[in-house]
Length: 335
Ligand SMILES: *Cc1c(COP(=O)(O)O)cnc(C)c1O
Image (cartoon, rainbow, N blue to C red; front, side, top):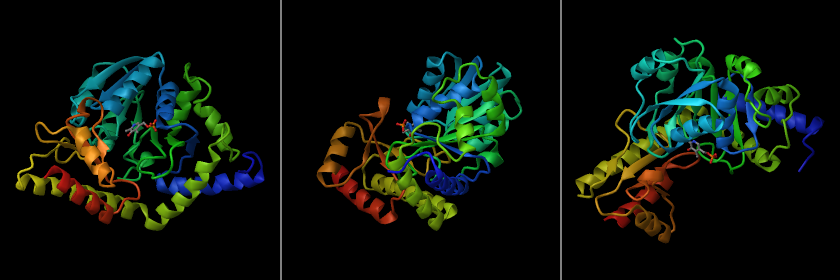
């Protein structure tokens, strides 16, 4: 460890910040929080909210965003969809015309269902309502698919370290727009630990607001180097290819008489995770257990989809070869 105050750590933080700006496609500071991503979800609503928030929900994590808003004392309306569907920009427009909201929240890639929201189109609609800030949970979006917070007018984009970033858990990252920082100044309920003004003041001194998870920052430095070496566009392409291969495999299994289904509709599928509905009578935990017995790991279903689905995570530093290895094992288990 080194001291987190002083010239050595400041130089270290400057180096990390330069890499972060490149991978996040932003000119804004990238705030680093020593919390899991849920912490920055709380930061998002606390710094953007005054009284009323609209939460777009279509799965477990977007529902969590709504719960956080309520827990922080805001009045939260929802544009609620059944799990597995993606939000429609024109329906969002109707909802925004029907109320006055300080912010909207949404999940970019809904990790419970594998649905990818078109955050660019949704943000574009919100921009017709100038008081409404756009808060995006991109925990399994960032790093796997193109995200341009500045160009797309995302007021707060957040992610965690342990998903598509492929780092150990313990950190989360947030990019706040200029308007978000202006809003934070007047946000009555922004608290202390997640006060973005506190983050900004320390960022300006190349420091973290409180003691950072330094050991994970060392890992971050290494991972940023790997990401920059691969290149973000190449990284996005690798994710898209792994996702397509997974969807194709589902088709092959169906041809062989194994009745699998992809939960997310075509055109709204996440490049980082595919939630697969199992044949009638096949129990999710039995499948994940049988895969573990063969020395591999596949994700279990989440929340209300726990027993009926499994989730293939094709994100982070995974390769096509690894994916093929896992799919071969899964084929054996399901046949
Ligand atoms: C994992 C996840 C979270 C929560 O992340 P933590 O790091 O556990 O706080 C939030 N949103 C999405 C979309 C996730 O996949």
